[in-house]
Amino acid sequence: GRYRLLVAWAAMPGRRRALTVLVGAVCGAADPASLPGHLKPLGEQHPTNGHIKTWEAPWPTPEEFFEISTKDKGYGEPILFKGLAKAMPAYDLWATDEQLLQRHGKEKVAGVEYDLKETRAGGQAEHIKNLGQFLKEYNKSDIYMVSSPISAKMQADVSYPEFMSCGGYLNYLDANTLWVGRGSSKSVVHYDDQDNLNCMVAGRKRFMIYHPKWKKQFEAHPNSPKNGFGWVDTDLDKKVKGYGAFMKLDVDSIDLTKTPRWSEVDWWYADLEPGDCLYLPFQWYHQVTAHAGRTINVHTWYWRPKKFDKKSCETARNNGELPKYHYNECTFGYEPPSGHLGVKKGKTTKCQKKKRPSSEL
Image (cartoon, rainbow, N blue to C red; front, top):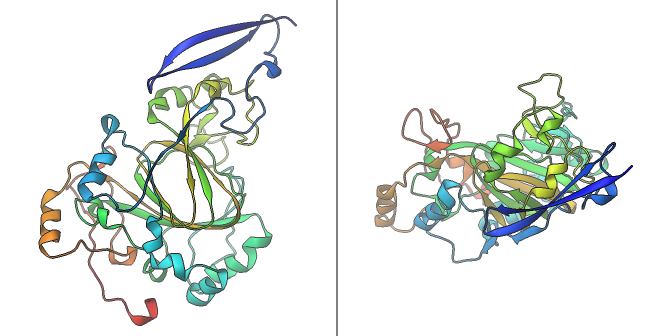
């Protein structure tokens, strides 16, 4: 057939211009060979904006962290905190499977899924009831752990950074999750409704990150070819396999004849190494790929405070150093009355220091 190449310059947000290549066929379908990144891994369809900002110690104050969270007209700014998780007991205590098995082998796990390459349709490995069973099986099967909540005993090994100890962050905690895999896992493209602090205890992962400015376009015409990105919402159509809302794509081979609009999307990335933590504000879309080898990460979803609680920080500082709370010292389960921000309505969460027994040190 004969093909027509239409090249259009479009001003894109972020103070840069992107070249959008639209290929339309005079007869029949567009020639896949003419589409940059066709049948290539996600990301090769459009140049990256680069790595997100990296922050090394000294860490931000609670006030500075709130400023980061509310930048960009409230969208917030993703930040990689380099080495932040090395202060967690888990960083040393979970260094090997042997240590984990000895320390927490009998701990119950709340979720093990099939499909290292996530489809959200693989189902649960319901025969695995505790961490020990998982550790004996995961290196020789297609399973990975997404356990929420983390068991109370394991929560004692995980701590929050001091910049979250006051200001209201810990008053609006939603949930915590433990991820364990043998590496090479790949998630779908999705977003979370809450702010997320995701810490790498072992292994390496890459996050591909997309600005919420794309939300209206990403989610228009869900479950339809008109969408152009592959966005599906299982709540709107029970025939769609899986759960929640996500991009139904093969992230290793993007078919631009079916999802052509990925040629338009600018993106960032974050490379997490052992000991790093990623702050990801709510509704930033992301896709996660684990490098080969054992990976463990823990994260907390929380609802960002609508207002910074200045008084709580004044009180904490008057009492000395800012406290460092462990997960097991906090309650979880806050849900805002509406929206994505934490407000002092309903049942808020709280943290209270506990004396750590020698068996947890």
